[in-house]
Image 1 (cartoon, rainbow, N blue to C red):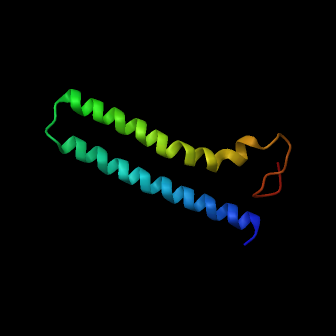
Image 2 (cartoon, rainbow, N blue to C red):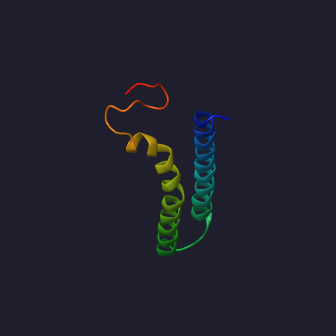
Image 3 (spheres, rainbow, N blue to C red):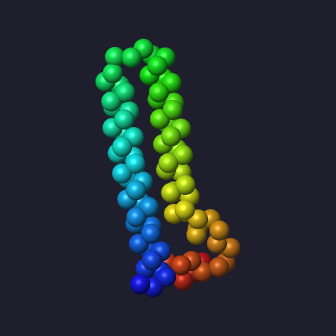
Length: 83
């Protein structure tokens, strides 16, 4: 497997993980809303889940975007070979 193929495969894996995590968090938020908890408890738990979601997903997104962010101006892009 060539370098570009590996890069594409890793991108697909990361995107798949992000999708799975989004589904997991969506399900968790739904379960919280179905519970008979006080507003304060729901707010605290929701805030914790939001922080957890961001900590889980952001590094994966940043890694997907890293080649675009770190590429110097005028340097050819890996997908098309053009700037």
